[in-house]
Image (tube, rainbow, N blue to C red):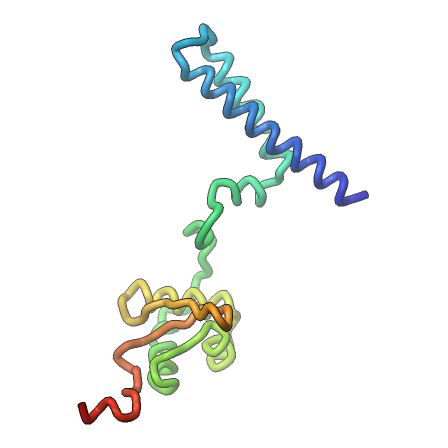
Length: 152
């Protein structure tokens, strides 16, 4: 029963987005002699979509791919990137979010934010291990040389 209600609200929300968009396009189009009413009707339908889809679903439409919006980042200790650099040196230059969280005994969200701070500062680069399914952060200055590559 609950899934049916969710589905109906989702259909209502997406339909309201379609009608709101069409009303806004009609307002902007010089072909139709509709004035500000088209914009008002579009705004009403966007409001209905906001209610029907809920704030989270509507926000997902605005930010569909990639990282969450900037205001969703977790505040961290200013020394966390330094602790992560020390950990990267001990680990040979490669870390994951889970490793940082476990070794530094911090929440996963803080570990990810700290690693991304290292990426933004240029100390690390973020790669994605497709086979394993998780992000790997590489710190080039702490990478251990491959065996046999020193003598070349």
